Image 1 (spheres, chains in turn yellow, brown):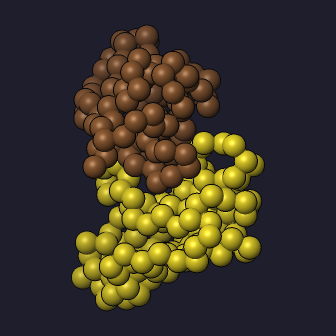
Image 2 (image 1 turned 60 degrees about the vertical axis):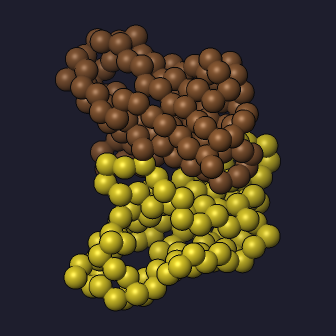
Length: 113
Length: 111
């Protein structure tokens, strides 16, 4: 059974820092991995989707990498801003017939001015 | 483009009352549909998923049920709410096993 872990659970940093959020998974046979952002009281917003054949994806100040063999993905946020404050979740689609993505519990990020 | 709508956005219900939350997807056909619950301080809990009309799989035994009367409509229901049903309910969709999209959520408070 796939298990997804996100470390750290919470992070507080000053504005301008470059950040790395971690996501690890136990079964490396995945279709893809997806990073989300969730603001308080809101739904999840898709940030980046990495297919299993890809090593990284970039969108603006966000860069997500994938290392299937080690079961890890990182979300890099460059030059963090207070508006980046949110909870970041990763989800993994595992190969083998299941349609169900497995979620980590998220990293709660606060970027203070 | 694909959009997903959930309603109502907020709901306050007494214990023992019925529940109906609706989710509708636009801009895609034959999507996989999901209902998740997010309780305070906890992760996402998958409640139900559906791969087609009338096909519902339950992940957690409870007093909730789901139905898919149309291809792009997913309904979460209860005949009698419990206090423990309070939470934030999220509907999501994707095409196998593609990018997952979420609605804005429905906040349920059971008193």
